[in-house]
Amino acid sequence: MRYSLYRSLFILLLFAEILLVSSQRLRYLGQRENAIVLILLAAIMGVLAMLAAFEIRNATIQHNDLAVKDLWLMRGVAILGFILAIFHFKREISVIPIDHHISDIIPTIQVMNQRLLAGQYAYGLIQDFGYDLSPTYLPLMWLPYFPAALFHFDDRWVAFTIWALAAFMVIRHAHRAGLSVSARWLVTVLPFMHFILIEEGTSATFGNTVELMIAGFYMMWALQMDRIREYLRGNPWKSGAILAFFLLLCLLSRYAFLLWLPLCCLIVWMENRKLFLTTAVSAFAGVLILFVFPFLLKDPMVYFKGLQYYSVAALAGWAQEGQPSPLYDGMGIAGIFRDEIPGDMAIRLAILQRWQLVVSLIAVGLSGLYWWKNRQKMQYLPLFLLGSLKFYFAFFYGFIQMPYVYLMLTPCFFSVAMLPAWYRMEQKS
Image 1 (cartoon, rainbow, N blue to C red):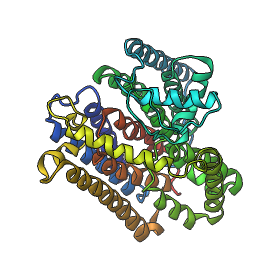
Image 2 (image 1 turned 30 degrees about the vertical axis):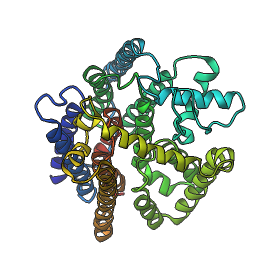
Image 3 (image 1 turned 135 degrees about the horizontal axis):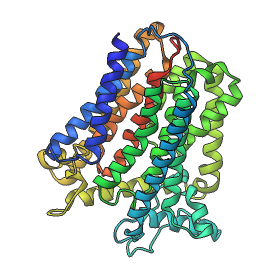
């Protein structure tokens, strides 16, 4: 009974999260209130999932087969969703040029891939934009765009393709898991609904950024967490390699889940030490092959220079007066720290950075403590892993130093990818 209540509340809050990130943003709430509500919504969603992971469900193990007409109707809706997403995406990027005067995200990726194509060092100082820029992107943030540099097409289609692949994987997973008809409809429709609302309700989110790719990577990671029991029971080398692959997609692009990973590693270690070791070895090898050997050995300080650039750029954004700013876009509470904390701007920014670290670690610690005290009562491990990551995301993104709207695509699409785990019929983890 409580499980059904938790699930219903999660879905209700998911719709609220989608609306507050996209079409209804700042329509009914002020920017501070919108940011605080978003943090609370995300945190409660994570808590609901963690609580539900320990609830015994009375549902029996079953596979819900669809009637042929329902199956084809659902496939038709999914195809229509993809077509509408392509239309909205193409409409946006057709009127937004790739221009470093507007945003240097995609131009930086282009420069790095062009250097790689020419056999040059990709992480050298970029001076093409009229200012010095130290590349900050980890390899899987820019390497996926190499085909665009090689075949001369718009880089933004790469990001869309990866997101579309992730959406297809989520929908396919929901169907193969034998979810109820209503659950399959929900999982089939929501990714496209959210995509269209983002395009309609925000400005240049898809045209100036590649965050769709990151959202796609984390949607894929959510699916691996939903399959964690299969990995725990399967061949440790095969399972470890697959888990490491999807882990690296996130870790070597935008490593937002880095502070949460130790909790995930501890749980896997306790459940299956062979799987933990094979995953760790495979992931470590991937980091060496993709980052350390080709790039980091040549200049061990290259990435730390990039991190310094992030702080410098954030401080410059905080210092701007009288201009539209992501600090006041309703996505995070950085603007409160900027306006309410005494001291010069650098001190205020440093205080926010410390708060982000502390509250993120507290979120992981509380999740870990709850798991440790109740681990013998665990009913559905995937839902706990997903819920703890969602709970952590609430604070990591809520306290981020520059809360751009596009950054919120990842935690919100991650919520959508959590849905299949809520409807799985199996009782025990």
